[in-house]
Figure 1 (cartoon, rainbow, N blue to C red):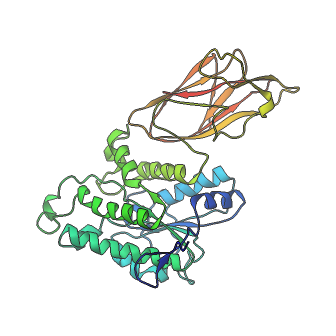
Figure 2: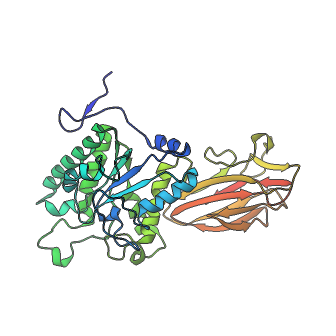
Figure 3: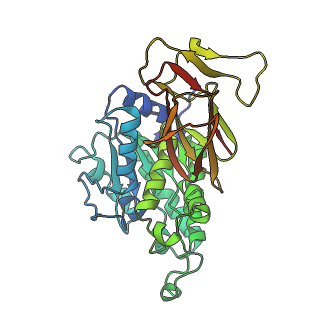
Amino acid sequence: MNKERMIHTDDIRLREPIYTFNDAWTEWLAGSKFPIAFFGDSTVDGANTTDWTRNTPGTDHVPPHAFSSVLERLLRQAANNAELRIYNAGFSGQTASWGVTMLDQEFGEASAYSDVRMIGIGFGINDRLGFPNEKAYRDGFKQSIRQIAGWFWDRGIQPFLLTTQAIVGPGVQTEYAGTYPMRTSEHISVANEVKRELAQQYGLPFIDMNRFTEMLLMYSSIPARTLISDRLHFGDAGHKAEAEFLFSRLCPRTIVADGYMKIGYSSQRVFDCVPEDWLTMPEVPSDEFDVWVDYEKPDRTDMPLLSAWVFVCANRKLTLKAYKTGPSDTYVRINGLRQTLNEAETVLGQLEFGLYKLETYSGEAARLDFKGFILE
């Protein structure tokens, strides 16, 4: 069956995916650079983050606190790969129609990003200001996104679609009421729905950044003034949260938690664990865990028992507890911070929006003793 599908005109066609996020992950594990870029406006560029400078087309733009740079550092750690790259192709004040005219300069053979393999297409916030009504906004924006995606597809670069960062704009700012009647957060949904529709129509990967950042603004304990001080651009804390959300989409090891959850030796995404033949599986479990490690090894080296990447995305804080069978030297690290497990059940704290690396170790002891974690 011919699976080619039209994207814009007869000479721009979508075919089977060129690359997937899993391709990126396995390439990174193999030590490859496999660059992914994010193409959009100032919310991609990193405006309002510390030490930010405005991007220049064709250059390698590395704002240290923009989500692209934070994401790159996280992925390098997770994949143990110092070569992988996440490119920042954000440009303050720009629109998708401008992006159409800049593709060769930003991603062509003479650019710093000429080796990009996948591209996250954003835009949409500034675009609403250039049209007289919602219908024109939808049609014009859709046309531009189709052209951008088609350009990449023709060059063997996999496009994917990214909804916009959420903003605080329920009503038009008074000074713009007469000139920009669509300058509200609700109107940006026109562009975001276009991306959702195109992703479904052409089978493009889709990441709903808008939904996540809306939840962040609504439910995070971080004050809105800290997250988005000018009501439009996220600062360092907001970009960090965005990077962690994107990590959860790009790293398939990530366990996403939005409520009660067990993490233990039956979990399918844990890593750095004890050998399976060291595990205990009782006929009649006595608590929530029916697989655990309670084993005597021949030495006293400190060894890993279980590790997990957990992304918390819930509208409330989740309490993290760790469990073991009895007295032992077992300890955990949460994002590198060590905590001792003094009891069979230890409350480790409350986790809210964000990415957490949970690591469990035996301590310098012969006994290996760990059951798992519970989030609730």
